[in-house]
Length: 171
Image (cartoon, rainbow, N blue to C red; front, side, top):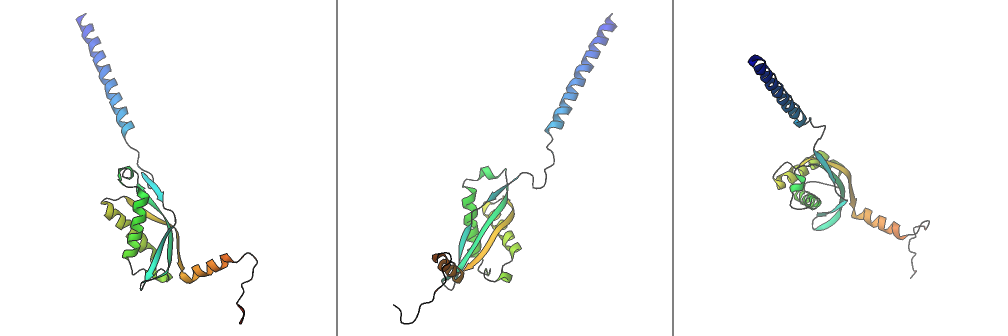
C-alpha cells in the first residue's frame, strides 16, 4: 500500500513539474519580440514648407524652399525635452547657413545625397544619439529674386488682363 502512495505522489510531482515547465516555455515564446519589419520601430515626422533666404555678398539673392520628412526612432522621440519640429527646423537653418559652398541656383552645385546625409548627421550630432535614420525630401525649390518679382507682378494683374507697357509722355 505504501508503494501505491509513493507512486501516486511521484505521478503528482511529475505532473506538476511538467505543467510548470510547459507554462514557462510558453511564456518565454510569447515574450520573444518578433523581428522588426523594414524600418520597424520608426516614426515619420514631416516639416511644413521652410523658406531659407540665400544671402551672397550681403544681399538676398533668392529663397530655398523645402519640405522634409524624417524617419525618427520612436523610442527616443518622447524623451526629447523640446518639440521635435522646433529642433528640426532650427537644425535645417543652421545646416544651410553653415554650408556656404552649396549653390542653390545651380542645379549641379546642389548635391542632394550630401544634403540629406549632412542634415541627418548634424541633427544626430546635436542630439548626441542616433535619432534620425533617414531624411526624405518631399519638396526642394529655389526661387531667385527675379522669379519672385515676376510672380508678384503677374498676381497683381487680373485674369485676362494683358501686360501693358507705359507709353512715352503719359503721366
